[in-house]
Length: 495
Figure 1 (cartoon, rainbow, N blue to C red):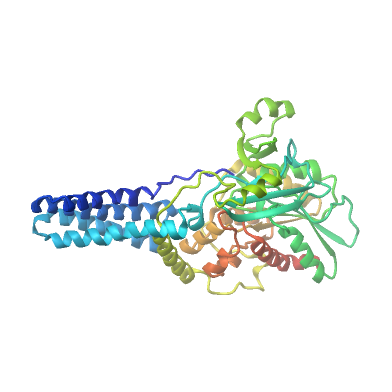
Figure 2: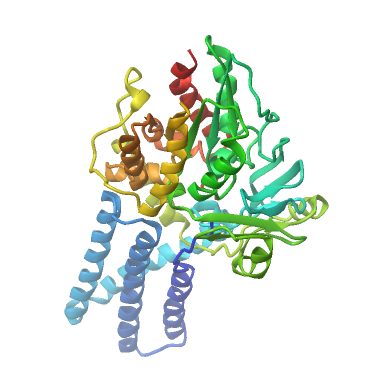
């Protein structure tokens, strides 16, 4: 999904900050009058003083989602203190000796100069290496591989597809994934009929569940774990997940491809933050790019797609053959992501991250999950009485109603995003998505597995190791961790 980020490039601050000392040095070298030095010292000192304050405050504002945590508020209060102190000093500037101006100038100017040196020698100026970026690009595919589909939204039409994402020469993921006989990412082909001793769950999800960027998506991993321990039924997990889709696509796939074609015993809705609000998502590819777009309703036919829908689609990824990809990757400058801003705030970011890490580890869940009661894990919280898009209730009514009328299980599972996990810990309350799932669980009397607490118990460093760098998705370790928890929670359904 494309994400728009408002960003103030901090490179401007240290560069502009170098102008005033340059002028001052020139004045000293070329023998300006002694009384001319004081105004320039004063101007230098308070210029970099104010610049540092606003840079620091701006950095926190840009990097943080409201409401701010304690670390953010402390730093912002510190910035306000600096600004007020500067104004106070300006008011009594005639009583302050030159040495004070010089001290302020040296301290703050040294910071900006040191940032430039560290940035060039250590961080090499690449924003993506040290500060999280928001990148709308899926990555680069090795060949055209997607065609529009009025039921699913899109369909893979190649079997072995390489998906690569690189940020400034650093690999985010590089995976050649298999598409099965029904066009979904899975290590097995799907069969419409099942044996009597088989208990089959159909899984709906988005990119976290489809996970074309990973070797093994979590439904396959969960199935393998369950098959080792189940005694009464032989477990099967069929994933009908695709990147970018949500409830609108699930509804279409369920009634057009699954409900009357597949034998199954239940469905699992693996819900990431806004999956229940997403409109119908479509993608396709040509020889150069992958395109995607959302619409309230799918186009009536392929002609409508070509004449109307197609015009509103944005570039969601690139297409390049493997030879070109391998050649470009030899360059440290190469990136499949676009518009990565440059930063000279390496030290500031490191300090900020260290303080946030300490705050996170203090606030994280310190108690273990109650393993005896977590089958229907719900904590009392502020109630929610409707979805963010109430009109989606009709789609849930259709899917859940069909399942209940035909004695099929419906299970809800929350899919934790790293930033929402962090927000939950810092704010000490649940996300809107979790509250919505609790509301749905209560409304329809469905089992709900909230997996956020299992990620919130992890230390800050361990949580980070579960997700990809410069991308919001989890890596194989995070996906497998999720699969292990889901397998344990689902075990009672197979025994």
